[in-house]
Image (tube, rainbow, N blue to C red; front, side):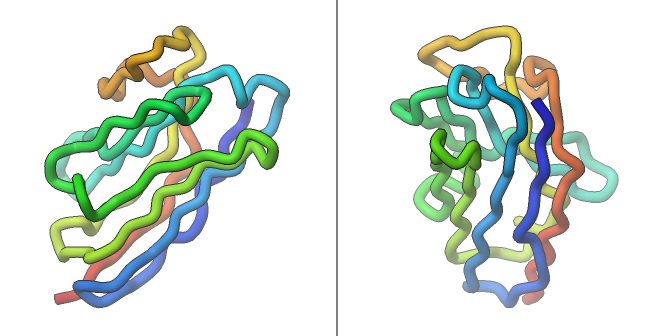
Length: 126
């Protein structure tokens, strides 16, 4: 599996962006996936994760109610709809794949994700 993230950009506070993570390879539909972000000088942090079926999602408290994670297994693509963006959401956003487990409760630990896309930069101006 290879991952390609896209959709980042510059947006004003209160605006919206939709990130996409396109995957190649035959195993997309059987792996849990997630979005994480990393701001300058900070560690990579959990944003949202989703099970292989899309039936279970988990969100960081900081984005709950504003961000929505989803996936389309027929198109091998995962999405992150980001609304009501804040300057503190500014970061490089990475999509990750958990190749080692397919639990019904997806991990929120970045260390559990084996494969990463290249990242897409989101900048929110105040």
